[in-house]
Image 1 (cartoon, rainbow, N blue to C red):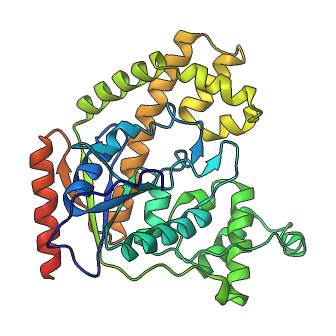
Image 2 (image 1 turned 30 degrees about the vertical axis):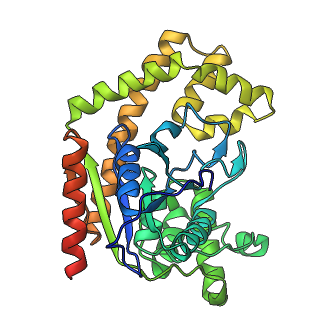
Length: 322
């Protein structure tokens, strides 16, 4: 946790806090809403963003740390700037870090608020993925080397319901997923266990054309704020270009531009297109969560902050009755 100032107290705070989750596609104003709610509910933010965990990746990942200063109060936050750029971070580590942060927040008597747009991370918490930090097993990998992808996918499906296509989109991911599930079957004690909490999930949505306008404005603001220079610093600090390419979006396109593979104008246009596509994929993930039984209460991201907060508080009050 970076910020340590106290937040406003709430006389109605439960002794057994629920987990409030604020999710939505990029550029919908999730962080600003989450921090405003944290101020009102005596809360602390747990970031669910796969790139904001890295130090030095500030502009491109959209940390927007100014949003954590609300009404002259610094809102405490977790899972931001916890690793050096280039570190191999994954959903297993995220869940472990989430559990540690959640327990610390509850021990302080504060309200945990999960906020972000990385669907896999949020889904893992909300639907309690059974994850295991299984070691690489070369003997196992050799034993399945002759199997087709279809055969491996069928075997994986015999262990778990396939939450998403990411486990099967490449041979490498498919083998690793099956390796993990096989390990879990014989080492159940190694599985992570999430706190048993009531989930109240708020989705922030905005009309498509409004989203496109916001995405373009934010992109230009970040380019003007030094996003290219940020990527250049990361490269100079020794972060491999291959790793930056894997981080995608801003880091991928700017790295290609710095390598001379595309002009500034081409980089900017391609990045704008990819961010729009990314926002669409985020919504696809959240809709899939809903089809899987997750209740998301959607609110209008273009409404005033007071109206958005009122809508969320009404959802919370209703959920507490059940």
